Image (cartoon, rainbow, N blue to C red; front, side, top):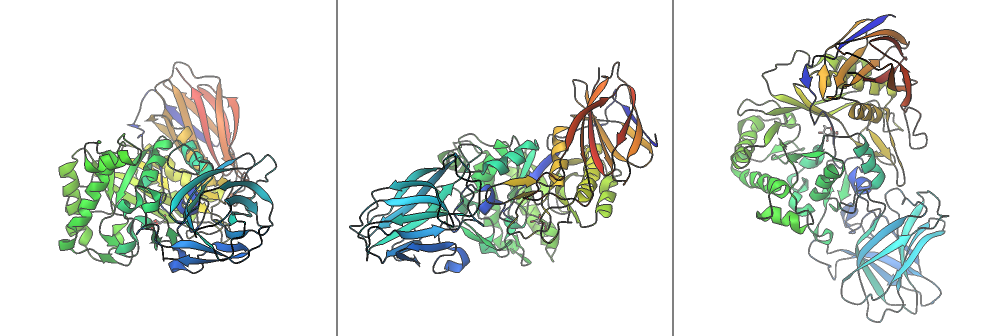
Amino acid sequence: PSATLDVDVAHTTSAVNDYQFGHIVEDINHSVEGGLSANVVRNSTMKENGNANPPSHWSAVGGGTISGDDATPLNPANARSLRIDVTDDDPAQRAGAANSGFYGIGVRPNTAYQVSFWARASAGLTGPLTLSLESTAGAVHAETTVTGVAPEWREFTATLNTGASAPVSTDNRFVVTTTGHNAGKSVWLNVVRVLGPTFAPTGGIRKDLQQKLADTKPGFIRVPGGNYLEGVVLENRFKWKETIGKVEDRPGHQNDAWGYWSTDQFGLLSYLEMAEQAGAEPILGVFAGYTLNGQAVPQDQLAPYVQEALDQIEYVIGDVSTPWGAKRAEDGHPEPFPLKYVEIGNEDWFDPTPSYNTYRYPMFYDAIKARYPHLQIIASMGVTSRPMDVIDDHYYNGNPDAFAALGSRYDSADRNGPKVLVGEYGVTNGSGSNPTGTLSGALAEAVFLAGTVRNSDVVLGSAYAPALTSVDKWQWSSNMIGFNAVSSYGSPSYHVVKMFGEGTGDHVVPSTLTGTKLDQVATREADGTVYLTVVNRHAAPVETQVNVKGARTVGSKAAVKTLTGDPNARNSITAPDTVAPTESQVKAGRSFVHTFPANSMTVLTLTTK
Ligand code: AHR
């Protein structure tokens, strides 16, 4: 063997944190609008592209024309509706509108789609409204009708069920039509939603994406971002109060950080429920008075934003006797959420002025600590004006070698300083046509993560960023999970995170590697399960002598999970498993030889007593 791995399972160096592995979710790359949000209708409220007329992503069907109409508002938040004017009086001819979804609409066989919308019509409209999911070529995969559309606004709900023969496909649209002698009559639609499969009954969270997040066994989800939280200008920051309550009352906003419209139908409560349903706790980001255009709110105008943050925290953790806790209960979640960490702002080092240190961080810190002394405060950059419980470090690098060098980043960190949240990290080596990175990048990230676990007394946790991307439209080159309208895949980086999430014990045990350079961390559970995680970035396999000290017995077999392949390989929506872990069993014991394949991450699971 050219390397030796010595592990001492009788001792521990530090506890692995409950938050050691987690995610950041913000609305970038359609992660949320057109992603986690299970609503497959795009431009649900007709406001995209500056109230484009006719509304974007809608088209006329059959004997009708469409336009955006503000004349009879549904409500002040959503005044503009889709107007369908029926021009054809042929009762055999349908007239209506179609929505093309987010780069198509995903259809699967034997699947239920929950439809809801608000509608009104000219007096005397005859016939029901027909709702369908159909291919762009016109094959109907699911159809139903609703009756009773009248001159007053009313909400309608229906279920569209696809049959066994519906193909797994994206080239579909959602169609609303009327038939009958209706020439000269009109139908108005607003807040049109079609929810595909959701992970749970609440939250409206797309099933396959939430499942992938949950499968990594995250300890936390940092919400809601990222630049998305900040906005480019004040008006377009994440105004959480406009993202709660009934969906029809949410005005939505231009997500100017990432360049598309957000209906805010996936609002603050959905972000919190996403964490809850993934078995994680939220790390709450609060807007800290800085926007991406480089403007900081002046000190004498900051107090309302501090209050907004206090209210937000109350919405998350207040009991039902508090005003915002009561609002959360009214919104369907009486139980407060668990919350230990609040992050003030995001990447405030971009602020060209020292305002974060001089007054913004202090004002938020003082107010939050006064009201909620038990909460830990995360600073988005180094400050001296107040204590930092935790500092949020971000690491992006396109070069895997440079990124792997971060594996020792925290080895000599000040043990008396603040804890570190690596709130964002990633090797940014997605290709121009594929928004997810290579195995080589993922292995460099694995080296880094091994270092964060070895230093779990300092590093509270880490999150790859961004977590999600549409493969049809993205703003960030390299992301963890890719999806289209109907399916999704994990990148090599995703598999690395999942292998750490599944295969890390609750305490770090001492380990040393000598000989050929490999990177490793060893952890164990109270029941004696020991995880040896080893990263081999070499282009050749490394035969390694493994010596396990400190156990009375070590099982003669170990489960082994290995991620390996062409270092330049990446997964894609059409080839999702090019790089995927394999599982087997190998000989083990107090002393055994294991060959770590070229370009690999391996988790060996030993049973010890
Ligand atoms: O993860 C993408 C972006 O990178 C985040 O929004 C921001 O915090 C960072 O600059």
